[in-house]
Length: 336
Image (tube, rainbow, N blue to C red; front, side, top):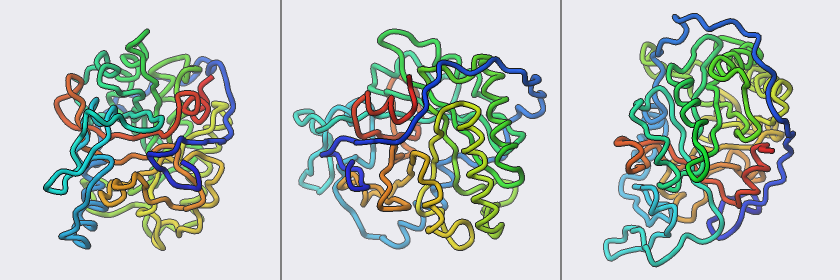
């Protein structure tokens, strides 16, 4: 993934600084009130992206079609193991005779929108290497299924073990420190030991802050670039200080604007690995996502919200790819 672009023919060469730690101190936080554990009217990522990414793309490219090196209809484990080839209908079809080139690791992320029927024991058999789990939102919303999912994933051992990582959804209405403190409280409520040495560094999700009760309003819009940047950086910096691990910033170029953060502000987040979202089929042809800054490569690329994982789940999930070896992965996410 040299020269700031992900490419299936290259191996991720990440030199992102990470600080190792053996464990997190036991929590002194009070038990989270039950009322704060209730589901909110937040939109699922699929609902958000359908409105802000998919619909605009279809409107601008009504007849555009292409072959996808990462298939549009991605399914574990075959599309992890094998590349795709163009058929007579100009569709990219998984070819079991062509192993996927280079070193890659594929993973998924889940939240309270994921049913409890989700089977963690089957993940490795389906070539899922890591799971990122929504932990919290704003300064007072706990994902209602985080504790269960976090514990179940952490119980996996031996050949069934996968990496796990928590993530926080940044929202308007609280300072960055308040949101970081709330994330830590939710994490430590689920596990008094907090983040373990084999866990991934946490993710901080900066995107459209929208709710069913307020329609299509992005609550970040119009709040000022200085304020948004302050909240996001304060959250990232607080987590880095408290955890001794460098958080990953989840965001995408399409969110940046004059109403939120001008694109030139992205350079201020250079100290944090990038988990970029880009679902546009055109960019899957060469496996090159759209980056907020062409000079900063992505550590992870979330390329779909509709991946299938047979035997694990009967619905679809978000999926991401890491280009590199497992040693690269551990270094990028601060895994000791």
